[in-house]
Amino acid sequence: MRITKLTRRRSTALLSAAVVAVTGIVATMGASDASVRLGPTGGRADGLPAYIVDGQGVAVAPCDTGTAICGGVFDPTDPAYWDAGGDAGPIRLVYSVSSPAGGRIARFTGSALKPGRYTIKDPWGTVTCTAPGGKMDCRLPGRRITTLLRSTAAPAGFVGKPNLNRSFTGSPTGFNRVVITGPGGFQASTKRLAISGMMRDNTAMSSLNKMALTLGNGRTTTAVTRTVRYSSFGTAAARPTVRKGGTNPGAFSVRDNCAAQAPGSACSITVKFVPRQNAGVKRAFLVIDDNSMAAPRHVSLRGLGTR
Image 1: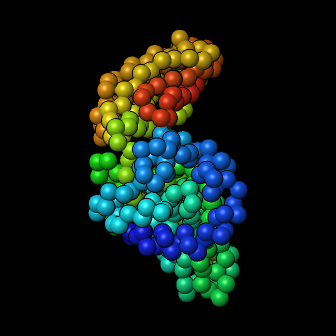
Image 2 (image 1 turned 30 degrees about the vertical axis):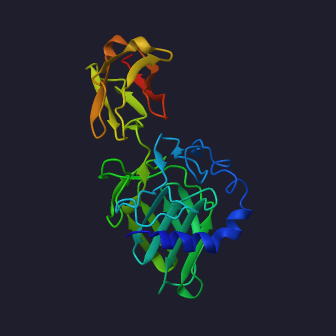
Image 3 (image 1 turned 90 degrees about the horizontal axis):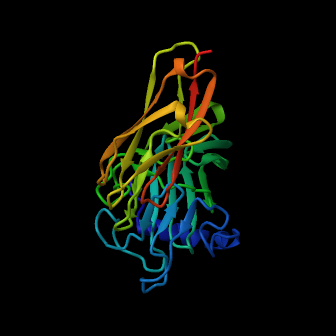
């Protein structure tokens, strides 16, 4: 599904009065939610921010190139930075982050539904919407879209591709799907969205597949190894470095297999713990620094040694 500029403009027009009433959304997209913040202004004739960036370091610029991947005609009064959409059963999902005037928009629509209240759990939390008369048109200006989702198979330089529903990642809690429940046992879900957004040029972006590791079980003495996968997905090479910290860093040995990682590449960081050499519980953390806007990141380490 493609969320067209026309759809966005209509949504913004219909919601403009409500958006103005939401504290912090018009003046700055992020005053009430620091996870998505505006980049600096300057360099654009319209005076709008050159990009927005979330707490995971995903930075997207206004989609104003007019390319097919960017999504058609650019609207200089309300440029789209990021949007996502799809269908969960009979309910259509639309999420959008546009200029400060448009703010964040979430909209859920559907027809031929049982009247009543529906619970929608998505990557950012849980909201409720009603379907009076069996028709839902639930519009939530200022919805807390705290991170910018990206497709698991996006073209280089973009976070996704319009009209191509794919699995996605980027949920701050790891809940990368949408689940809807409602009256009469209604259930619908999806793990696939069409996502649109153009990455900021010459910007390193990266992700980790683990934020915490537990090594050992307190009974076995065999050495335990775990791996943290580091992925580069931006528009410039990412250059990670790794060091240890915390209470017991010496209880863990670390092998850093990463170098300068080109966009689209990945590497591994291996952590080893020897239970028979460490009695009780040992704690430490990895500090993974790089040249992305999300640096540094921490991975907590918990080793369970033999008694």
